[in-house]
Length: 362
Image 1 (tube, rainbow, N blue to C red):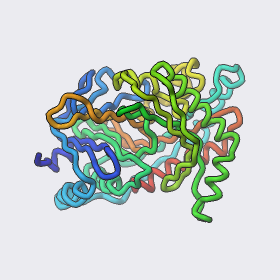
Image 2 (cartoon, one colour):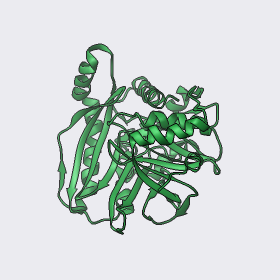
Image 3 (cartoon, helix red, strand yellow):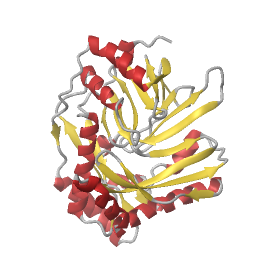
Image 4 (cartoon, rainbow, N blue to C red):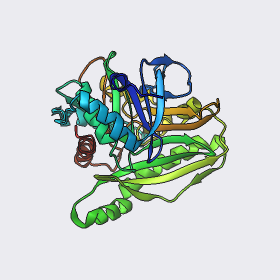
């Protein structure tokens, strides 16, 4: 199939299938309540979208080098990539402290054990095709620890684009997911070796991480015997995270059922879940949240087959997003437990935003 570069830049999507292959789509979006072959799953965080599935008019699976050397090169010959990045208005400490006060009140009442406050930086400039092209070029070079993902629609003035380290689930011979919670910055000294050790031995970070593991295991127990791997320190370009692989054999549930069962884990939501997803709205800024931390997935079948062979659902973090023609926002969240220190979590939020700015050059 011949890819239409201009249509791709105007209305398209990107999803990394693995380290070498990219799914890309282009053309007018079909928005539906159900999945089709080549559909992107892109609900908002609170799952209120009636038509969360977006299917492009055309799609193709290509190698990363072809994406860079042919498609992006063709586009760059017509549209000069704008690599200047955005000017950002950073979130206010006062706003974050107000979130923390509300969360700690629930800690004191014994209703809540963990929450994830989210803050947002706001760009001064709107997203344009030349800026999008520059970000796509950066995503093509993203390390294997990050999964490039996103969609955009310039006619509707919306999109989300980034590279996430977190997968909500994938469905193959078995269901695979992960607990990814607990963060520490990488220092220059000793290539961050000491930072990784300190993260692994930090009681607060391990407690936060274990809450995520326990929640996922509880949610998946209905589907079969859950297998939990060893916790280790995952290395990203500028950060370390605690990570634990989790799997279940022979799960027969469909994509949306699993998304609704797992989203949001306490890595982006609350613990215990009985507190309620909707109760998060007490401190969350919904107008800016939109798809930050939401499920973002893809279903794909092989040529000539109706059987879905690729079903993957990511967690939409480490990205920029925009909607209703407004300038992009850049969200960051932190796991907050009773032991958390506000100043330390505030610093972590900035580290995460800075990592996105560095990877995407925004």
